[in-house]
Length: 207
Length: 378
Image (cartoon, rainbow over all chains, first blue to last red; front, side):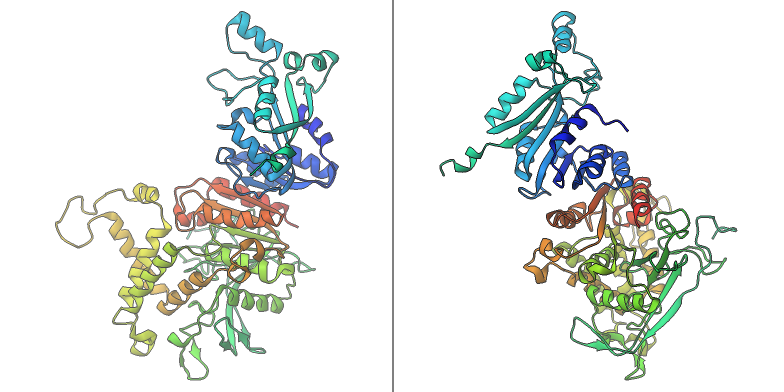
């Protein structure tokens, strides 16, 4: 089975035998892949009944949780990676969830559709309508994406939250990257993939 | 019962009884039982290497009759017919299922209404108070007797789920999977309060005779009935009661009296009365005490995470949205303790209006998850 664009990239970033929490894990595809290829252990977090059944069928540990209620079931630093693919834009308070991710995990991996992509810009600028694209397929009134952002927006938030960007990749929906995406990621990248951690400086702040 | 047994029913079943009198069973209360009997039912076939056995632990007022019918005249099948049978989550084409009646019960296993060999009279109130841990110990002896060294799964709902959890703690190597449904790691003060009211109803019934009512050829009917009525209210949800009864009147008009007027009153009285015919008041007292005492975290600095450090089974935990007796938050406490220990666990909260009793109902998402999990068990 072919993995979704961002999942292929993520699985390369995750080291073997690590313990992973996958927020909004869907049918468990990433965790199955990580388990089989990287000997990874961990849990998926899901809210959709059908996805939960699919995870259980696939032998993936899944915990029924509403991400809008935080990650209170998970203890500090209990995972090597906390992954959230294509879900941050659907969360009520993405800033709080980002901090929660880096509370329970050593590192966070986040992917989201880039609203700064040139097609989105053109659509809004010339068409005067909310963009619809391969990465953003729903109409404005039926989309679950309530907190869309650009790469620049996201990095600004990370800066404010004392979050360090360890690695960044921008790809299109076919998981290809190119020199122009690397040159102007916020214009040509369709999907952004970030690897993050809390800045160590946070821990030596004066009392 | 239906004229023809449906293909997903285990069919006609008979109970078996085993006697245990080689070694006394020492109990948490400090006393011991030198000999006792357990009555149980089995469904399906034990395979050659005895690796397909599943233990079903029952809840407060149920028994060993979990599936099938005793005769073609039976009105109702066993209490978990929705989940046990060919093609059902606990698939009897694949698994060998064992369901015992708990010690202290009143359906055939040794309990307060059994004859005390020392006095040749019914035990009555002299029957020792049994804990969840004692039950698990007695079930482990049954497993030995059946030649089952490791259960493929131990499964239970409500008080049965507590036994499954205790199994995983006390005998970590003796089960590969643990399925805990609509349960809690301990009772809340509110839970204990409900149990206390139920017990007071029984204890203060003039026919209770300090538990020796057998000798007076009577039963504390009123007390047991009240206890059951109260319990029943807590097993349902506000929404399910509204759906079932609303404010419907039995005779379509108010009678300005204290007899049964609303349908819900009639239903509760019926539930209470029929319970008196099938259940023993001393057993009811014992079972509620076992519930109240259950708290495996207590001897681990009140940390459930510590209590679950050594468990080896994989877990499936299921709760129901409208269950306020054992709410989802209580299931999540168990899930969190398992997560803290990096144990294999899946958890789902099933949307349902059926309250605590939902675990007995064939709710699609519940059945799907349960079935998917059981299909993956080895």
